[in-house]
Image (tube, rainbow, N blue to C red; front, side, top):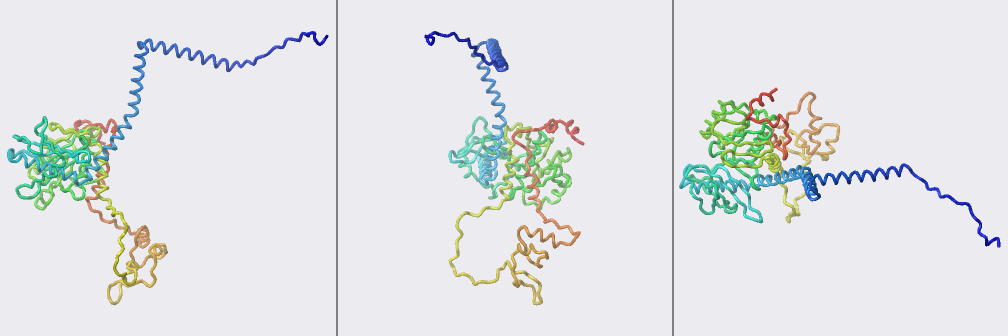
Length: 467
C-alpha cells in the first residue's frame, strides 16, 4: 500500500543562463533600426511623399553612376577615334579621294567663277554599308549651282557627293598635269577626316588657343606632312619642338629665298611665334609662291586661322569647320610606325625549284676576303667556323669577316682601339624629324594645369611662364 501512496517531492528550480552582453546588443540594434525608420519617415514626409522621394533618390543614383562612368566612356571613345583616324590617314585611298574631290569641284566652278576654288574637304570613305561621302568647301564669288554628281544643302559653298563618284572626278588642268596640293589633316568630323589644302588661299595656317594642345596639333601635322612620299618638303624652325633644335627662322627664310629656283616640290615652313617682321616676310614669300607656312601662335597677316582648345577640338572662325583633333597625334604616330615597318611577306608554302640542283660548292657565307699577292679576291677559309662561335672566342675576328646579329656590336667594341669613340651611323634628317614629331602630347581627356591652360592670346601669361 505504501507504494501506492504519493510522496511529495521537493520543488526543482530551473535556472536560465542570462548573457547581458548579447541582450544589450540586441536591444541596441532594435533601437537603432527604430531610429532609422523614424528618420527615413521624417525625410520622406519632408520630401513630399514616397513617390517624390523615390524619384529624387533614383535621379541621384543615376547622376552618380554617370559621373563615375563618364571618364571610362570618354576614354573608350577616344580609343575608337584614334583607330578610325589611323585607318583614314594610313590608307592612301583617302588622300586620293580628297584630291579627286577638290579637282572635280574646281573644274565644276571654273567656267562660271574663275576666282573660286575648293580649299577644304571632308572624306568619309566608302564601306560595305554605304558609298561614303565627300564634302568640299568652296571660297570665292559667283559660285554656280552644282551639277551632277554634286549636291548642296543650306550653304551654297559646301558641295556634297558620294565617295564612289568622287573617285572619277580627277580632272587635269590646262597643262595636262594634276593640280599640286598639300593636304593638311585637321581631325575627325562625323566619322570622316577633314583636309585643308595649304596651296590654296593665303598659304599660311596660323594656330592659337591653349598652349599645349596647339603645339601638339602643329607637331602632329608637321609629322604627317613629312611622311615618306609626301607632296611637300618640310622645314622646321627653332622653337617648335623642345627636342629639335632647328635653324633660326630668319636664316631659314634667307636660304629659301636664295635657292628658290632649285625647289622641285612645295616647301612647308613650320615655325613658332614669329614677330611682326618675320610674319610680314612669311606672307610676302607665301604670296610669291615660294613656301607654305604652318605657324604656332597668332599672326596679323592674311592667313587661315584655327583655334585649338584644351580638349584638342579645333574651330575655324568664319568657315564653320569644327573637328576633333585630340586623336590626331596618336593617329599620326601610328601611321609613321606603319610607314616605316617592313612589309610582311605573303603567307604560303615556298615554291621549290623544279630544275636540276646546282653542284655543291663552298658556302659563300664562309668566304673571308683577304689581300693576296695575286690581287684582291675572296678565297675560302681553311676551317669554316660558325659566326656565333667566332664571336665567342677571345681573339678578334679575322679581317674582312662579316658578323651579323647581336655579336656584331660586341665584336666591334672589342676590336676598337682604346680611347677611340665609335662613330655613330649617319641618319637622314627626315626620319629623325618624324621620330621627334611622332611623340603626341594630346590625350583624350586633358589634364592641363593652371599654367598649361594659358593661351597665346594672353601676353601676361607668356611672361609669367618665362624663367
